[in-house]
Length: 336
Image (cartoon, rainbow, N blue to C red; front, side, top):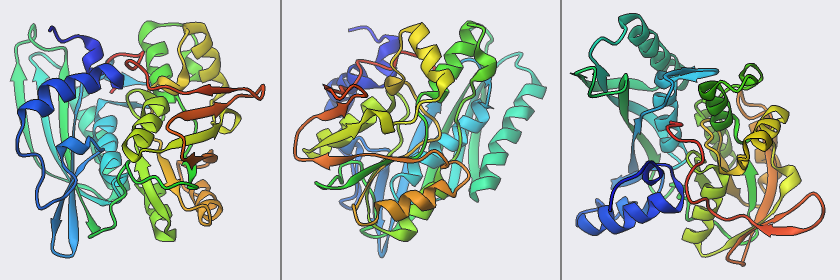
């Protein structure tokens, strides 16, 4: 087998790589009975006394490094903060490693570091340790950033993506496809990129607001593979299904137009500032109203509910129904 780009693009092909080669060759995958590697959640947990430490790690190879709405620095911190957050933990600290190509601009590096610090300031997270390496300019495309996030939650308060319960309402915190479509449009020079901007943002405020109300059973960060991949992961791990109203899923006009032109389903495209939540039906309206008051949650919607069926079913605008399947891979490469 040869590794291809699709093996790192989310979806079924990447899941096969993880299952067949990675998980099959690692024996120790969890600590103290917490959420471990084989759970394939947004992070892992280490129960310690009355708390659980949450750890999540991510590598960032985005191309280009600077794009409308953000840059590799912003996405590296926000993405890891978000992975920790959707586990139900308060993000505390980041470990940051950078591999930089020889000849890279010092001014651009400083700009990237400042973007990282801005997200840390916004979320109250500290970069506490790191590592920097430089490689020959013909061995690396500009730079790679690897971040590991650490957070903390009360013991038993974790919100795994497998925590769906029948009757739960599904909340989506905002419009989908913004990041992947805007990045591809900008990178390929399609000419309408001025109307599109990445949604890259930290979601901790949205998550904290919801957790303070209570009734949150499961959360997911719909990055690579978009909401199609995230929703199917949640239902598959929970042994349940969802019934969703397609008209309730927010898609910006510009994203819809660009998606149609490119032949891409915005439901399969990465987001970098959104949360999917499964919440108690009695709490759903209160949580939705609170999310809409946050900085990044103004377009939040209740898009459906959890069912006993084993599929993610979409009711279309025409009144028909279709199965929303997990993508083979995210259609936009090097998106994060």
